[in-house]
Length: 314
Ligand SMILES: Nc1ncnc2c1ncn2[C@@H]1O[C@H](COP(=O)(O)OP(=O)(O)O)[C@@H](O)[C@H]1O
Ligand SMILES: NC(=O)OP(=O)(O)O
Image (tube, rainbow, N blue to C red; front, side, top):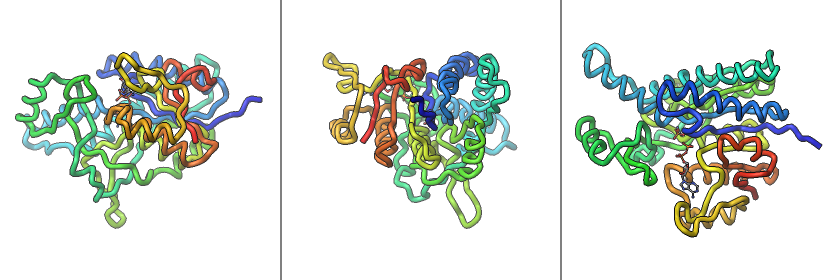
């Protein structure tokens, strides 16, 4: 018998592309994949990344303030807010269009500007690790570091990128509003780019200079919303051990014990697959009835039917 599931979906970089025109095209196939799950009868809540976009926005705002002394530099937290609105705008319109095509003319899609509280003493503030912006060559990265004081790191064999602090999400500030919208059957896009990082200062929420990992934020959201599944959609169909090596092995199924062992062995690259596996483990550990899955964006439908993807469970 069909069981309707509440599913939090985390969308990776390939769901959005790297530039404005790329994003306009990419969101169409993303909407297609998401609507496949909605059409199956599932309740879907959408989280997306923002690494390339927040880097682009931050560079543009910094260039503006260099050109015009009257424009103070834009804090990273505001750049995250801008990325939520810009990505949400494209994504909600693509979803709206795809839903209407499939006859869901009354299903509203809404993007919630979402703040996520972090701990101001999180050691991540002292150890920038979250890659943002475009991939650069070593020479380009050295020039950027010298010109702007950015910290640059090699990203999983794919080139160099700027890294910024990435504290763990502690609390989703707008959770009640998100929960009401989801309960009322709306399609909600929330915690975009991991959420706008804020710290609590009395009654004031102060923007923090950071970018939260959207995989960890989507795990927190999924737990808070009592979701049945967390699905992390990325650019690989399955998680592998010995990734990229001759003895590479794609995994269908991962228990928490196996996942922990592979993490300890360093099988998953930090800054790419490791946060996904850790978020999946955290979600699966929270309840024996909860499963997390990591798969390719285009395979979401097959994944949920158990035909592909890597499932992480207790
Ligand atoms: N063990 C692994 N198994 C599968 N993919 C891996 C593994 N280690 C690193 N990767 C890489 O991680 C990528 C996903 O991370 P990333 O591109 O940062 O995610 P996102 O989709 O959130 O932007 C995959 O496309 C793959 O290239
Ligand atoms: N904020 C975030 O995790 O973005 P990416 O998924 O693009 O890295």
